[in-house]
Length: 64
Image (cartoon, rainbow, N blue to C red; front, side, top):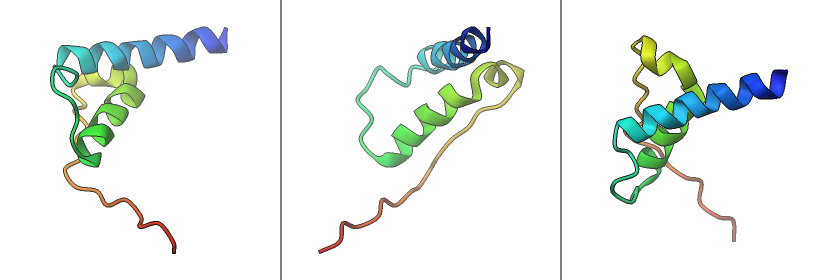
């Protein structure tokens, strides 16, 4: 039962990301990827007014 709820939650977030046209252009930076990930993770909260955005992020540099 819990797995069905989790799938429905992330499914609602994926539908919200598709409706916001996040997949029409290829994401070019980690901010775009972060926005997509947060939108999917927010699930049905997107339909209650939540509009998560990641404007800037920095990936860690690999060690030498």
